[in-house]
Image (cartoon, rainbow, N blue to C red; front, side, top):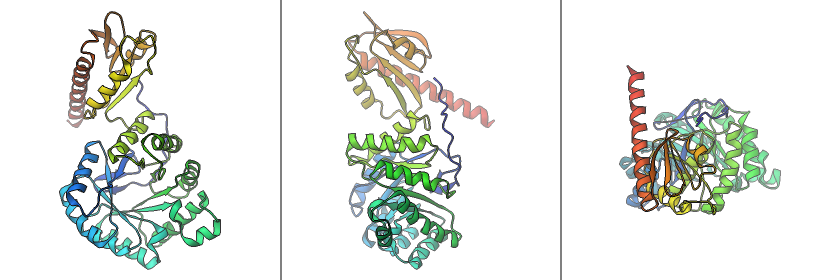
Length: 372
């Protein structure tokens, strides 16, 4: 299977969010955000660890007041994944979390206020060696822009971002990324396309308030997919009214489908029909649940019959083709074994784990040999 993407990414400046590079030649990073009460340190740490275990590169934490800022300091000491602090209204919160170890300060130009306050945040970021995210949102544009445009528009989002980008330029601060989010797919996509040619900084993608797990996944996949196909985007969040862990799963699935990241199992599975020789749907549901912990990039095909099964199975690391009386397993494109339906999921899980372990060992040997 060809794992090379035809997408040519927009050239952007590389910055860092803690240890994670964003922009330049860095992989597109996947983020989520906690939804626990930040004051509940244990619950927030637990959720951050679950999000990180799902593969998140970066996690954002809301810090609405000074008490939460102090709680953030305790949270930061207990986790290893880089943390972005979400700051609104009170710029002094940003100053405090910068001292407490934030890896990036997310500020909303629409509600931070005067330029002197933005300057104080910039100087705090510079002094602590951390980056900034300018987060523009259609739901919280500055009042003068609301009056000028009458309603949120792509041009209004870009103008909001550019006035603050210009100010950071005057302060000679370049370690920032920009997001222009809207719940309307067309508005968000057009705003990102407009600003992509105007600045060199990395862009954080997102369709804000996208919806629940199903509808939000569809909306985000459409909007982010359009931008990623254009080569636009250096980091992303899929905003779902769901468990934040689901945001990470969907984010990686979007990137895997466009061959922009290769983390975990890429399943190719038929939708099933009357030709199937085993229950494809229940098999896939079980495999996806059982194998969530596998992070090695591996392509697996699960096809219920012999019409398309052999062709798909020959192009992946491991493939299962439905057959009668037994199902046929291909490994690296060649017939390898046969499986009965009795213990199909158990047997297939073991084969996949063995193949992933072998591939991981091959990758480790390759890295070792390249380093010699």
